[in-house]
Length: 213
Ligand SMILES: C[S@@+](CC[C@H](N)C(=O)[O-])C[C@H]1O[C@@H](n2cnc3c(N)ncnc32)[C@H](O)[C@@H]1O
Image 1 (spheres, protein in one colour):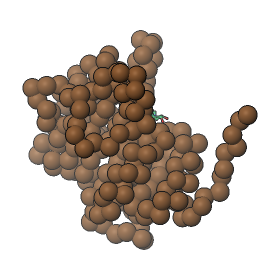
Image 2 (cartoon, protein in one colour):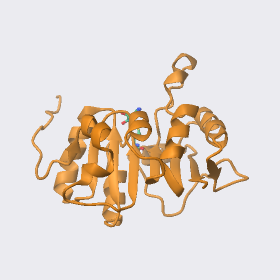
Image 3 (cartoon, rainbow, N blue to C red):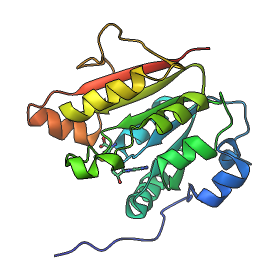
Image 4 (cartoon, rainbow, N blue to C red):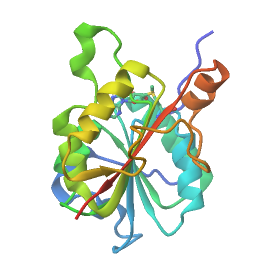
């Protein structure tokens, strides 16, 4: 039996439009409730959203923009955020590339999270992978000095590509060098995909790259 999608939001609806993000920028999405300055964190492809809910609850002093290309996931997440009573999360239905490339001033983002971005394993689909030089360049430009680009993948082939693209971006430095990635980051919040992959015994690759001044 198919489940019915509930459209009502049980509290404040913190979704915002990409049109507003383009026109006014990411920081304005928090007005008038929360005014800058504040550390801004972006998660791209939040999926079921548990990671963002836990992160935002842990850091009430920060502001979080959660971006997801699936509007259904954004709707479901809007219901979760409303029930949580968090006021420091804003949701965007759109592409992460557009958000970091076109909606944030240079050097204004504290951290960018990309957890288990789709690996598109078939060679013919590899061009759809998020980690391409243009995306990583715009993410690096968006980060403030010492800001972090934080990435996880379970896919060994995609991990090699992510390593190549990240290490080729001169504005970023690998905080785990000389290792290209690590297989565990103590204290890191687990996403639902990570739980599934770990239960299957798959290795996880974590990358953390810092913006150099
Ligand atoms: C494999 S899931 C991982 C979900 C979540 N991060 C986790 O670890 O549980 C990848 C998610 O990224 C979303 N996504 C794919 N391409 C995207 C893009 N260009 N911008 C934003 N979200 C994207 C998908 O809709 C999907 O929800």
